[in-house]
Length: 427
Ligand SMILES: [Zn+2]
Image (cartoon, rainbow, N blue to C red; front, side):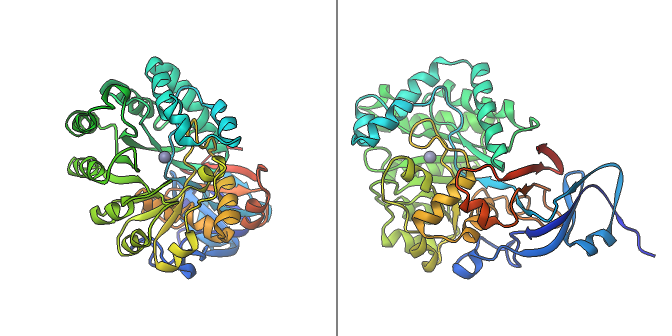
C-alpha cells in the first residue's frame, strides 16, 4: 500500500512539458550546443506542487499514481498544450521615473546613443528625473511594469538601481524593490546595486571620488540595510574603466554580494576578462567582446548574459557573437535589459525571437538560456529555472503546443496561465 503525496496544485493534460532540466544542471551552467538545446522534454505530462514546491513531475500516469490532490487544491487542465518553466530575467533596470521615448526616434534617424548622452539625454536624463520623484510614486510605476513582465511569463526578475547615483537616491531605488518584494502578482525580485551605472554630473571631473563614495558609503549602506544581493558596474570606454570596475566589484564581493558587470557593450575593452578574473556571477551585453574575452569566460564560472533586445531597439547590428561563444564553451543566458531608454521591452518571448533571428539561435536554445541558464546567472539554480522535484513551482501554460510557436509568433500573447510558487498569478 503506497501513500500518495499530498498536493495543493495539479497541472495535467500537458502535451509537451519542457522541464529544462538535464542531469548535471546542479553542478554548473551548461556549455556547448548539445547541452544548450536540451529542453528536458516529457510528453503527456503532469506537474504537482505542495505549498509552492514541486512534489512530482513527469509522465501523467506516474504523477497521477504518486499524488493526491487535497480538498480545495487547484487543478489546471493544460488541454494538450505546452508547459515551460517560468522565465528568469537576470538583467533589468525596471525602477525609473519616466521613459525616454523621444530618444528612440532621434536614434533611428541617425543620432548615436553616445551623442544623445553628450547632449544631456540618456542615463543622465533619467537620473535628473529619478531624483525628483518620491518613493511612493516610484513604487506605483515599478509595480505596473513588473506586473506586465509577469504577464509575459517572467516569474523571477533581477532589477538594478542606478538612476540615483547618490547615496539617498540609490537607497530609494533599492527600498522601492524591497517594498515590492513578496507582493502577490509580481515576479520574485532579485535586487542589484548599480550605483556605478554612470558618473553623476557633480562628479564628472573627479570620477575616482565617486568610486570612493560607491565603495565606502553606498555599497556598505545598501548591504547594512539588506537591500541588495548583487553589485554591478558599467564598464565601457568613457564610463567606468576596468580599474574602477575592479574596485567596485571587489568591494561588493568583500561585502558578500554576487558580482555582475555591464561589459563590452558597444566598444569593449576588457570587462569580460575582468569578470572572469573575479569569478563574477555574470558578464552582461558582450556585443563587442574580444576573442580574449570569450576565452576567459569559457574558462570561468561566469555566465555570459546576452541582451539582443537592446541592440535591436537601438537599431544597431553588433549583436553578441552567440554561436562563437557557445562553440567556445561560454555558458550563455538571455535577458531583456528592460530600461527607460535603450530598450523599453520586458518581454522574454520577444527577446527570444530577436535572439533567434539576429544571433542565429534555435528556439530551444533560447528557452534554456531564459530559464536554467538565467537561474545560474542569478546563482539560484537550486530554486528556479527548471521543473524538478524540490524547486519552486513556477510554470507557464502556453496557448500553443510547442515552444517553437511561442517564439515564431512574434509579439503575440501566447501565454495562457502563469503559476508562481504553486499559485495561479495571471490567467
Ligand atoms: Zn543594463
